[in-house]
Length: 193
Image (cartoon, rainbow, N blue to C red; front, side, top):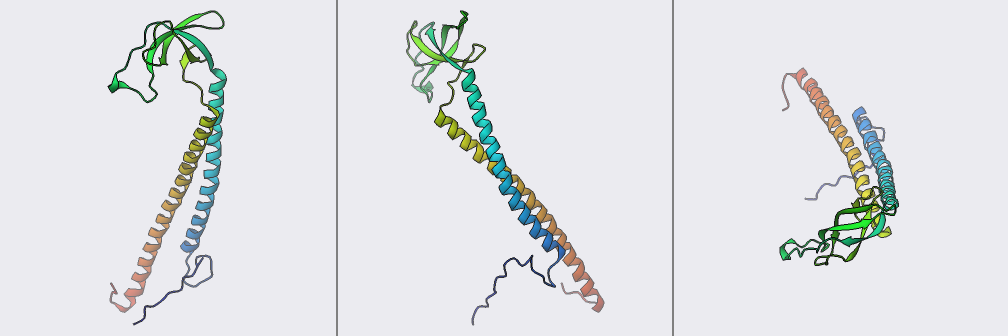
């Protein structure tokens, strides 16, 4: 016995047919608009997020400056169980600002550095110790990652909304079909289901 084959009709919701309902056309428009808005929204959100990351990193770089500080006391050896990924420890350092103000703060330095050693630290415009600004390659990596995440999030939100609208249309279509079956069954006095 040969298996029956159905030909697949593409774009059937857009073609004229006596079986096509208004909800089919609305669903087709919802799907089309959902994909278009998801693509455009994802592109826009990705570009805006990437630009914001680049702007923030460049602003941080502009506000930071490198100063040479002196270690106030010996940096401790963290021990094998407390080694961090960058192999640096917190220690007290002292430096002089360009305006002559002497400052003291905690900074990350290599372990076992002796007191009086010179270390480079980055400070902000207020004189506080900050992390080293991102390099060009790190800025590029962060902006691409931020753009991809924002694009994925924006596209996902739009497609999720389109999916929710489709579920509502499907529920309404099932209720209409149930009502029509009810009308068709009752004239003869017996039920099909």
